[in-house]
Figure 1 (cartoon, rainbow, N blue to C red):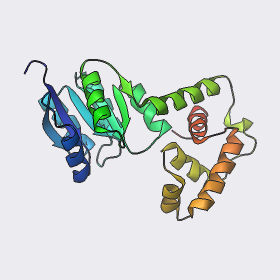
Figure 2: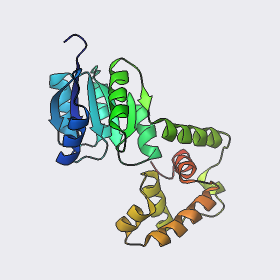
Figure 3: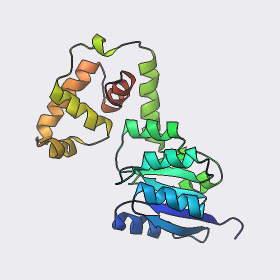
Figure 4: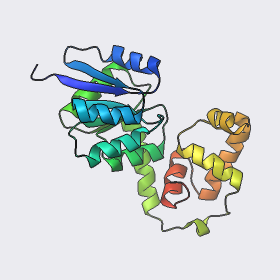
Length: 217
């Protein structure tokens, strides 16, 4: 079919791949491959040359952003949509700077996912709009300041830096607590202290500022 969209799904969880495959059941889309990790994803794009790849960010061997960078380095024409569970400012900024054509969250509806695939296949970029608006507002605010880490109200402690890194990755308080062995309430207290020290009002602003200051890469 002339207007057929060939597509690869890359995610290390079989159930997620099955779910995406079911959501993408459409006469205009033909799924030509499924990858378990970023390295497989890159190899499939190189050999199969699909129009679009749906790429999870957190994968073993080579993560989604590294695979995206490899695809772009080889000047392959496949359009890449990054898919993630996390509202991570760092992931969004890294994905867009590396050349992703789309960035969507895994709670996306079937209709929204299909619309994203169609748009990207036609050459349009598509990013989760509400999340992008939050990040752009925070970037705009951060650009008005020329602060350095030395200008913080008070230096961040080692524990607060641990919290900040996971905040930038988009983890919830409970998820951060699970990683660090803390209660959700304790993490909430740390997060509020981190935001205060950074002079920010919310987690997105804190994440953007942390990246701008070089506190988190």
